[in-house]
Image (cartoon, rainbow, N blue to C red; front, side, top):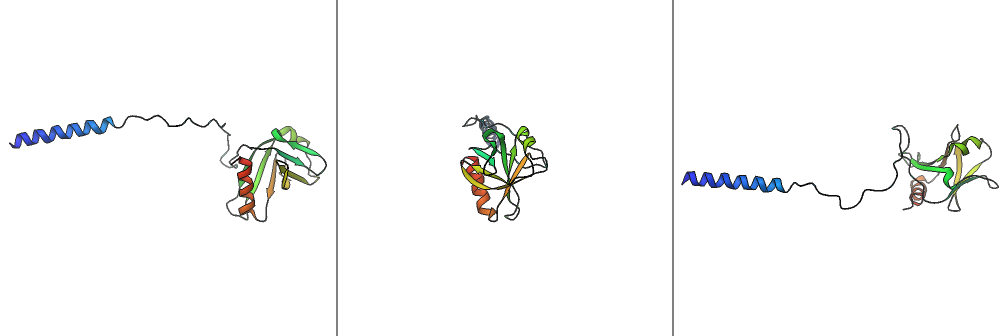
Length: 145
């Protein structure tokens, strides 16, 4: 009788192992992977994101950059005091810019702030006194969310 119980327990154990193994079939993803292009970002650089809308860089009378001249943007800073938006400009446009005049950036026709340029004019930066709400709200709009 003990032998029969041992054989039955062994058979039951083998069947349960086989059933567990059959449940580990690889599953197919339920949705297709994103079609968004990959933007290579260096470890020491911001995480750049595509812009969903029309951007312009102007001084009030002249438009220096528009639309595709803005390659992408990033929200940078860990605290509200440090937060800023950075906009990567096309190299051809950057070569034409100077440290003067005062530049402003618009998004879909709305002025979003005064921009400062980095030393080689490839990145325009906008800061805000109320960055915690203004910068994150602008970033959300620019991402198209």
